[in-house]
Image (cartoon, rainbow, N blue to C red):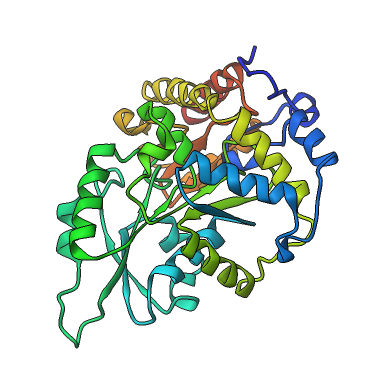
Length: 360
């Protein structure tokens, strides 16, 4: 049985299907409590800043992160791109990890919207250090594009949900301040990082100028992310949100689910981490699998195939067995645990993956 917490009931869809969906935590269904809150939400026109439920969500997010203000946006990508625009000028560079979401999955908007280019640095398990960042900062000469921003990702998606420790962040914050550079956090799964480190999101993000986090991944809300920062930054962010088509009207019906997510879903993320560890340890014993167990820290498991089969072929075979997952390149498979897949289902998934790879 699932060890789900109160207010996070299984959905009818989950109960009705035999498919185990480990493609992403974005596939989670809103809980019964979220659906009830959405149905009864008090709404207004948020472009006029008249939606009381959105206002409560933004205030709650700002309080949780110890910030002056927050803004509700439709997607994490929009939140990140607004932040990049806030901190940079056209023609500058943004230092980030080589596999960062803002590089691989945000449609080159760093360049298209902000007129910047990424200066990528490969970090061990996706974690950048100040020494690496400092070496990538452009020298102050007029014929070189200047560094405008440092952007980090915690947890790091493509590195397998790895967590940047607080001590590493503190060194980066100190160095960036001395260098006069702002620091943004793509914290799509920052609550997963905080649970892993057993600290608060406010403590874990206190040195960032802006932080984006998602409601629609492990927190199970159907839509939405938030960007937090100073009042001045968020006032400017409203202009850029409108420029990107993110001005929303009676959006309190979505913000209501976000409030439930923040109140009920953050602490249970430890269950997802435990299930990811179960999957990883099971897969480590399977022939044809290579997995970095030390890198499985939160709810993402990435394993490499060493038996000659392509990742696409394995993913297709697992789909026929009722297990949905994704490929990373040609030789790696990604699994993501979440609220809608319980421990028993993760055990079943591990068994099916072993059977698929062994040809049984």
